[in-house]
Amino acid sequence: MTEPETPALDESTLPEPLDDVVEAMRDKKAEALTLLDLRESGAFTDYFLICSGRSTRQVKAITDGILETLKILDRRPAHIEGQTTADWVLIDCFDFIVHVFTPETRSFYALERLWGNSREVDV
Image 1 (cartoon, rainbow, N blue to C red):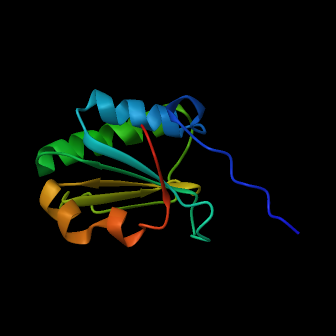
Image 2: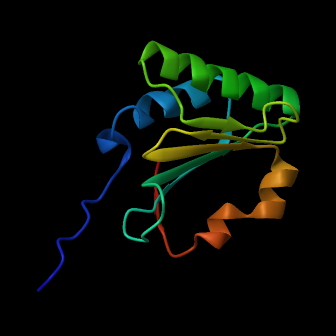
Image 3: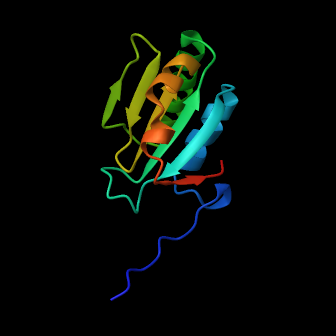
């Protein structure tokens, strides 16, 4: 029996509220936005949305923009980590997880490399 293929994604077909979160990131000048489609990997979530801010101050601003967008959409995150140090903020939104890094921390942890078997979606 053949498994159904996971539908392809692009920026025009992102599930809600991913498209709104991407827009919030862009509004705060987030850099190197990457969406990893983890649906076929058996991971604990469907997507990782990853971006960088140039400083901890910008990481905080990006995080605040994302949280404000989620509040407007009435989507409360399951968990938030890293807001105090702001070199890596993780926002667990159940079916997707947002990672906001400083460039140095992103390079060190290299999530894109760790999840290299997942599909990268243009955003």
